[in-house]
Image 1 (cartoon, rainbow, N blue to C red):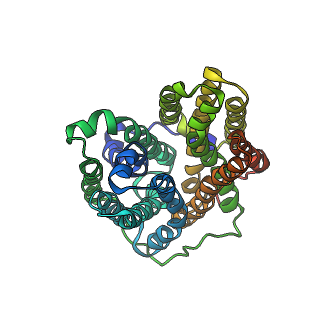
Image 2: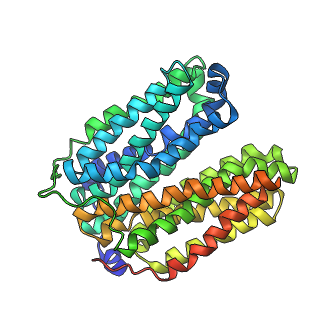
Image 3: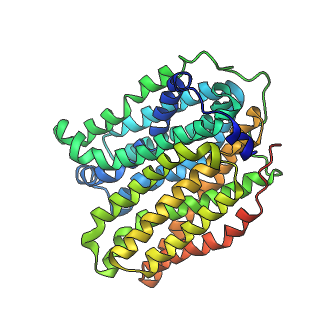
Length: 394
């Protein structure tokens, strides 16, 4: 399959550009609403008097919703089609994300954060389901790489531009900053209806619940959990790990390079997607390298630990794109949203729960390294699945 993909000529830039821009912008909004919370959290906490747990929930609650909201996304795709679902999901995301900038108290802040997370979660299966409607079969891999590049750029933009650039322009108001990041998504949602090539509504109502009889649903989800728990987990515990090592002063540089590595991974995949997507050997190699990078971050200290973590982030980013790009290539367009939703349900449940379980263990033992050991144990446990993946189109 991968050889057949690679054999095709490169897509015409003029033909692909309008759709590519829309896919990229939609991808950006898969992460900006989530990753803008950490830099704004201290300002929100000061005004609303949040506890440490509630401050952390500004980021962790949307990640949990990425798992819970996958099924409503799949249901919507089966009823109103992927493009309409994507537009609806972006509207829900904007209501929740912008709503955070208007809330009067903690309860409404958490409700708005959950609504925002639901919208982002519904967007996730809608994008891969939309690809077969907008792109030729030999363009699917590059289409996946484009919107995943937008997603990973969204992580970097949301975390990196908010405090030094956007907030000073808005009189250092966290409320205005949330509105400024959120409202432009309405323009993207409206622009989704510009491309003419879309069936808009399925010919027949297809199944929407995950097909647990299809081994790919669970296997891809478990491997997605490897990538997600490694990235989100080490990102969450980086400060505590460096503090325990006596290198807390390195945290700003560590987080910059750690998150930028995923951007670099997405740029590599823009170039290599048509050759690499569908190769089981690449999935195996990236999973092994991700685990190795996590081991290095745990066992080394100082810059050596940071460099190893950065390499892990890079390899986990490539692994993420390799896995997310598979459903449009392996199943029919009617089944793509269903398979993607099931994969995200499993993957993001694990990306949330495995690091949290590690954190509980670390709180009990007083050693933050135990949190990372839990992530590593899970990763090693599911690694054999990568060797047994069957990537033939059904």
